[in-house]
Amino acid sequence: MKDVWLLWGFLALPIALGVAVCLWDSIGEHLALITWRPPAGLFAEDRDVDGEARDPAELRGTAYHEAAHFAVLYSLQPDAVREVTIIRSAHRLGAMFHTPFTPAQVDVAGVVFFAGCWGEVLSGVAQATAMRGAAGDFANAVPVIEQFVASRRRPGPVSMVPSSAPPMEQAQGHYQAQAFLHVSNLWGSIEAIATALLRHRRLDREAAVEAFNIGKTMPSADVRSRLVAGWRRSQAADERIARSRG
Image (cartoon, rainbow, N blue to C red; front, side, top):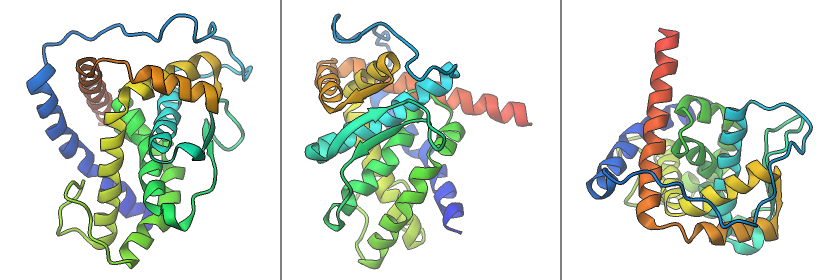
């Protein structure tokens, strides 16, 4: 049943993002998409470190997924991050390594777990595809959400589900909303980290933090334009998937 409400909870994403898109559109709908790139010299030429052929779309989605995990955790708990990689192993497509979360960091953990899926969706990956890629994150989030409910806390003013929803769904909506806000606010840094990952496949803490800081120089108008364009690509991808199944 936990898997069911986790999946159904994400049905609220289009509604919330639709509102966000309207807000951004009022400012930057007619802004042309930029061709921003990190300063020359930071990244080496692209190379296939893992030695395996990877589907480019899968690789790109993984890069944004892990970049979002790293950027959000670094912004909330800078000392916790260790490295980030999109080198595939037997059990994962990529990973963000960090120190273990303590009981006092339960809210940080909840936001970080949901950040990866948002990183994929806002980069243009179909929501259905991003949700499959985040299955492990959803499973990790269950104890965090259960603890939120057990503590009888109330979700914040911004949520992905209505206040009439069951407590578990309300708690999930709370963390989804917080993750969305963090990912969207950090999008320039996420773009830079993802770009570096696609070049190097693995970044230690120092390299990932350097990319994070470079991404902060992206103009806010460009960030808005990229977020809106990414969400629209994600919607279009979901529509194509729905038509292919219909």
